[in-house]
Amino acid sequence: PDCVVSQMAGPKCTFSRVFGEIKSADNVDENDLLAKDLLRLGVFGKDAIDTDSMEGVMLYQAVGKSHHHFYGISLVSDGLYLMFEFERITIPRSVKDVYNITSFLNSLMAV
Image 1: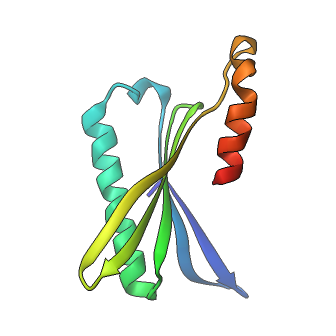
Image 2: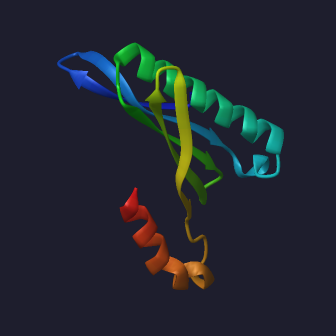
């Protein structure tokens, strides 16, 4: 993954809680590439759940500076994993877009 957030215990990393994939704005229409990254995120999340005996992991995919998707993956039953999108945030890029800031802040707080 492009980004990993791990828990530290002293100088050692104990386990990873968040995985992220980041693409430039040039890739916003590259559906195959974005789908491949999303699949990779699912695999990293599943492996983290299995390796560290966690109930779930948070995943995110950022495309450019303004499009961010947040996902969760959890072990539902033995061998059955559920991956779901729980938030999609578009960060305002201009003064014209600032009128949506209240909605943006509410969505950001939900994450």
